[in-house]
Image (cartoon, rainbow, N blue to C red; front, side, top):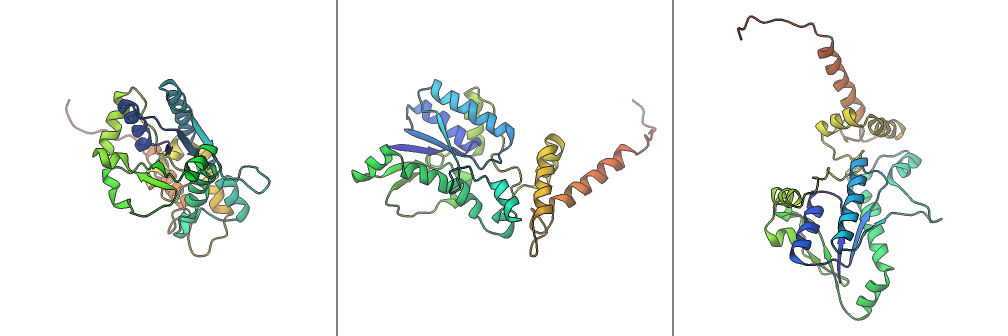
Length: 251
């Protein structure tokens, strides 16, 4: 049995494309929804799910973390309720564990076909999308349930190879898949989010303002996103109101 945890980004999309080219069919494909992906990512998930069905793959199954009453436990709302930021802002990675890894593990633990494989003494082959530039992230470990497969590393693919495979397939290059308020967001990406999706940057800054912080300054850990946007706005205003100055150059 072959399963794939689809992240919605470049690497995982390239893997699906190459699996189709090789005639290898995953049995199950899952996407863990934190409730906080950018709209373009959700649109890409829908596009790829339709592409999968068209090419004889199973559709992408969306799973999410749930509360005790069975309702969705999305990361943004959980942070607001706790007056906190995602754990990564404090130097931990439990947000990925709780809202990405755990929901998919729970799904497979209750999947009849997976249960049957384990009862038969078999391991399930799980695809992880690290490319050759990320091979340092690979950790060798023994798992009673899963055999981990890193196809991009096996194929010798780097990020550029992934992009090329997606383009050849005629698919759009996906955006970076991450929560819109992810603390690992680069400053230039914060500015880009402000320019293109101001409603999301407003929600991220509200999260910062709502959080009870003592050891960190904000989503950037040692700086707040509010400070980045305030500085960016001042720069924009400065150039917006600067008078035009003619030069003496000849055309």
